[in-house]
Length: 153
Image 1: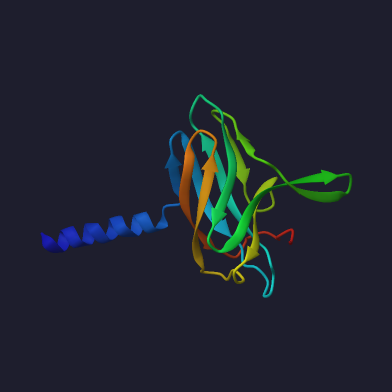
Image 2: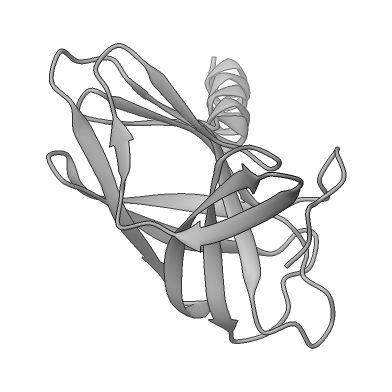
């Protein structure tokens, strides 16, 4: 019986370790991750597969912070003719019943400004997300090699 309990506990721990969704109120934060930064790079990039607002009231992502960088900026990428432009935005709207992607290669991402050290595959850190209505929420971030080509910073 004790062996079964230990086995089930181990399975529960393993399932928890691979969980990538986090709930804060009506918001579901899906798979926070960052990509490796080149040696000597001052900045890094972090992403979320998305944020789903399962509620009936809009919310807004206002910003984020972490101990591995001096600050985090919310960035938006848009095509301006044939040129990709990136700019800091004051927030990201989270409409009710919708999902907003902050994935690598998509419209939005987190710019980690003035890293303490370059990010390497396997590194882990916490990032605190700040929402207008849902408040602050800490998520664990793992540095992973991206599957698609990165737009570069």
